[in-house]
Length: 161
Picture (cartoon, one colour):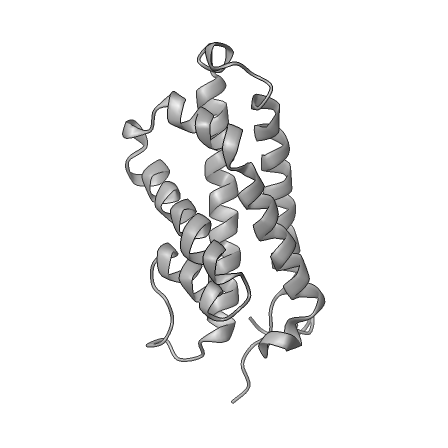
């Protein structure tokens, strides 16, 4: 039985979403912490950061679902997805086990422990970690260009996914 291919349209849509979210978040990089704490800036930044993280892990889940045909082999948590992307070579192991695994943990906090996330820590993420999203997107774009290196193909338009 053949593995299903990557849905290039889905991946490109999620990459575009991350790009749009990062553009919004980058606006906050110009803010001082005092300006960031004013008004609804924190809530707006939280929204875009959560969306970007969701898109990252939707991409990751889609890819690992093509790498691990057996459900028993497939990762079940976002941290496992991050580590599988490193183990498979799609992402550098150090990035997957470091930055991307931390992103998975932060996504978990934003979704389930949002009341514990402080504006100061989100400001720090925006100031110092948006490059991690850019690096992830570059590597996924490389995968889309040459998926056969990883034993994956691109789905045909009429292929059921």
